[in-house]
Structure formats: structure tokens, C-alpha cells
Amino acid sequence: MPSTANNCLCLHPQPRRKNAMTPAPFVALKNYPFVLVGLWFIGAVTLIFWSIYLADGHLLYTLDDPYIHLAVAESILHGEYGINSGEFSAPSSSIIYPFLLALTELLGLGSWGPLFINILAMGAAVYAVGLILQKYVLIEKYQDNRKFLSKGFQISIGLAVCLILNAWGLVMTGMEHSLHVLTVVLVLLGFLQISNSSFKVPIWLIVTIVAMPLIRFEGLAMALLSVVALYYLGHRRSAYLTLLLIYLPCLVGFNSCKHLDYQHCQALFFSNQVWHQI
Image (cartoon, rainbow, N blue to C red; front, side, top):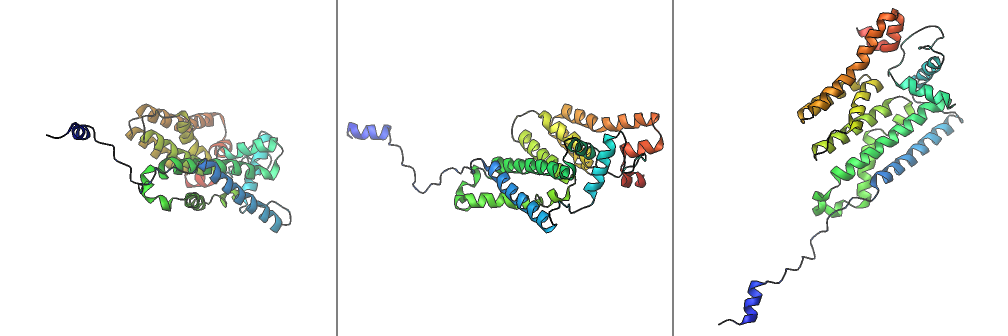
């Protein structure tokens, strides 16, 4: 007959020791988005000062369009809309960008206004990219490849994404493209949140989708695609609300045209390129 000690061993087996070779759960670099923004900012400042040095101390953008936007911004401050005083025109490729530059004109930033807006917008976009990489790319399912996800590798991934987004070059264009990149990245982040959890559609996601066509006319395509995605994911009320808010400025604008002449309507609600294609 087996001993009592043996019975105890059979009924209560000792816990197995963990394999010393089992990799520990992978954790992304702490404060990863801030680290990525910091590295991007160092590169952006270096590029700005180097370009000023090459231009004999002058801030020059890589395109002439920012100076057109600045001229429109000044005309807005005088109650007009266009380049030449007393002549209404639509030289802008964005609806709200000249109004943002009008605010920087009020602050006395002058030609530095476009650069200021671009740095803020692209910095926020890089931070959002860092959040996406930290939460949805550099995650625990890659723990078996831990040796390939060192801190240097994580940073390299982030900088590679910044390079793909042209996060340094777009700043020097002085255009609204950095704002456009920001809205696109925020929309991606918002859909990742609502598709991977039971979160409701956040207000900021709806606001971002609505702002896309106001920042760039090309943003209307992704805005409408985002509405379809909201509907497909079961957020039908949010989809209807977003669609209404997207077309609300158009309805208000065309209704206002009844009280304005042809030139005012063309200047306020269309760009020259869009108008000539109609």
C-alpha cells in the first residue's frame, strides 16, 4: 500500500517551475510618443535654422503659396477676401487656413505664422503616430521577437513613419498640408479605438472628420469614407450626424449666395481651380 506521503504528492502536485528561457511580456518604450516628438522636433529645428542660414538669415518657404495665403489673411483682417484690395478672388486651396493665418497676423507673427501653425500641427500628428505605434503596433503579441524590438528599433520605426509622412519637409512648405496629415492620423487613431473596444464614438473624431474638407478640399473623399466606416461599424447616429455637419457649411454657403453677387460667392466658397472645373 502506498504511503500517505505519496498520496499527498499525487493529490497536490507541486507547481512547475517557469522556464527560464520564456521571454517576458514586451512593453513599449515608456513615453514613446513624447520621445518621438522630441526627436522629430530636433530634426525640424535643425532643418529650419539650416535653411535660414543658407538664405542669408531669411525665412523662405519651399513654395510661394504661403505668401498668397498671407495676402488673403491680411485682406480678411480688412473685411475683404482676396489678394488685391477691393477685388474679391479665390486664390486659396483651403477654406479655413487663411483664417488661421489671420489669427497669426493679429499676433504679429507675420511670415512666421505658417511655420508656427505647421510646427504645432505636425508635432501633434507625430504624437498621434506615436500613440498608434505604442498601442497597436508595438504590443505584446511580438514578445517572441523581443530581441528585434529594442529601444533603438522602436525609435527607428517611429522615425521611418515620420519620414514616410514627410514630417520634416511639409513644415517648410508653409501650407495646410501638416493640418491635413494631422486630421488623417487622428481619424486612423479614432477608428482604431472604436474598432478594438466598446468605446463610443468620441466627439473629437466627429470634429476631425468634419474639419477635413475645410482644411483641404481633397479631404472630402476621406471624410465621406469615414462616414461609411462609421455606418458599417454600427455607429449609425454618429454617421448621420457627421454627414450632416460636413454638408452644413455648403448649405449655409449656397443660401448666403442669394444675398451676394457672383464674385463674392466665388471668392468665399470656392477655390479658383474648383470653380473653373465647374
